[in-house]
Image (cartoon, rainbow, N blue to C red; front, side, top):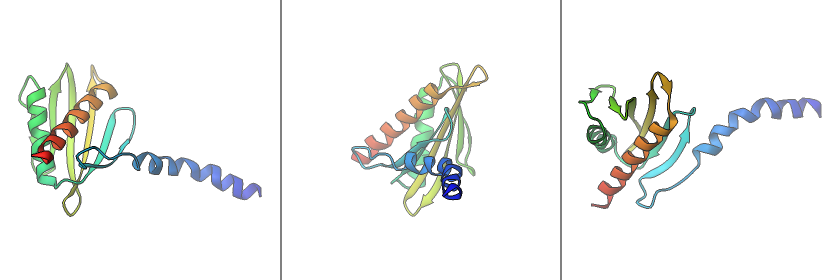
Length: 133
């Protein structure tokens, strides 16, 4: 009995991410799941191909940033200066016609979840608006 209770207590933290990953569908059907890796990194699994997600992410960051954004096309990663902070967004292939979006932010050298969340939400809204066209 004590061994099974100990095993449950040891394995419990491993399943918390699974519960968080099962959250949500957006009205347009773009978002398959989302999670927060730490207090500043937001991750979304999207029902959108990687090229559309990447181009929308770059466009959104460009509109939000007061300076030109830095991009790495091979890694599909972009860094933008937004609201006195540094936001990094990356896009990965998840499956056929599906992608993963990751957004993190730092402001004054400290992780900033609020800034990451606002950029993350804006990218998802832009993807949803493009899906409705």
